[in-house]
Length: 303
Image (cartoon, rainbow, N blue to C red; front, side):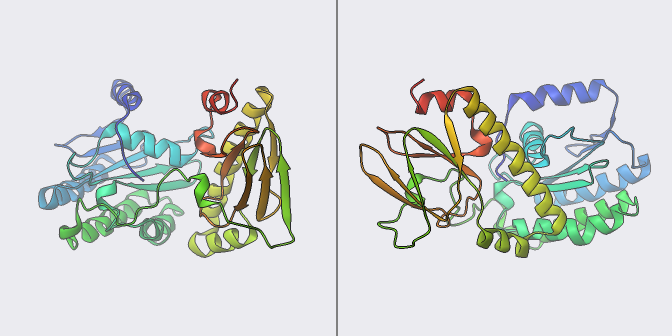
């Protein structure tokens, strides 16, 4: 949920204003309701709630309501939009973006890194599940959003001393091959690999079980749909460039090349959707499925 500025969204916001969608930009308040599920009075009331938080703490909340994502993952869309809007103060990174996709029945709360000690992922999921979803199912969008804004505002106001603090021991976004390596494999269920290829890592039953405890059924369905999309795209790119790709079938993988033997425990690192690039004369490299592109493939496989 880390927010970094990207130029694409600046253009997107200019287009949105030009199209005449309902926006409320009182001071630094950003509310964009392109579906018009909110009345002007409801939009104004939400703006007052948001402005009260900013006046009190400096932190900012934005709301975006759209009709559909046209198959774009909500995680990708909301992060891209949050980056472009630039919510929150630069030195604190204390912005929050609430994204609602009406026809797709999806919601997401994007939290700036300066608020992640206050609004952790599980709290954001709880707000969606308990404060937003019940009202949204009844088409009461204002009520659900008002509850969410109030809950977020209270959390921030009650934890002012934590605003701007970076989470301790933050897990790196990009997993490394060292995170999967073990000295040896004693388990009999081992997947043996060799040659030039990409290993598509799938979550194990154990990892899926852990996710089922953490996410609701709808959230988990969205996660798996997004992962499937990115893995399919990655496999298509690999095929188009003539790179063999195989799917992980075992927890343990042994790979031999001219450098050494590499032993992987795919459950060691909590990154179930990645690709491991394997080449006969290079150290293996881990790539997030969302980061796979033609240049990365060509660079690693010397094409």
